[in-house]
Length: 359
Image (cartoon, rainbow, N blue to C red):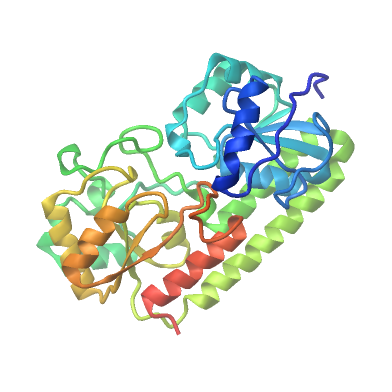
């Protein structure tokens, strides 16, 4: 374990409380690194510098480290509350601080700046999320068995947008579906944490990584990881049972962030934009979504609390549909429909139940 410890600042649970913490971070020379609590409750545990020094790349990785590390860890996140995680840029000082961490927990391909910084940092212990679970082989818009049938039912509309199996549903650049896509053109959906089963597999891997970094508390880490995996299995059961007897399998989102969730529960996501929540859809894509909504009995267009509201409301207004929030759980702010991963995911489940007509 490293002898050097950085002073930690309590992570604000809500965006409104972050100004004081951010000012403190600047004063301490943290250069954007905000500290997080330990013990899995979102509250700070222990004194400054106590415990294993864990750096997490963004909220879903931070949540795992806090829940599994418990009282033995001090967790800091590279992303400040309210900041778009995949737009993160790191300073040379932050890269150097990564090298001082006892463990770095991150998701490869989601934040290119973090990937590069970890390579440069020389950090000894790294927990990379996709190394613990099998990533989906498709990018956004992939047609599974239901999706292929869905595409043929909509005929020419899907063909003109290249939504077939052949190109995995990737939109051409001129249609406005590229932009930053978490790791490069045509990159696969990185939102693995939205599948509770796969997120549980990642949790077990992080537990093993913590045990390696801090063997003295290995039993505690593995026990905490098992407990978190059990809670995620219960969440999976809630989703499976909650989405039974639904009217439709199709849901429309502003941002193609829910491929893992759709794949797990046999749903079909249609997105206004691609993986880039700020990209503008083409006229052809909007016409296609009109057909999808009418033919698949879609009555809701989802947007994220932090992005996509304008395009979602434009489509909803044109079709006389309602809008609702479906949160990708990339961070927790005042606008989030809950205070932590489980609260937000259960809010997502209720929103999906209503939109899909589940009884």
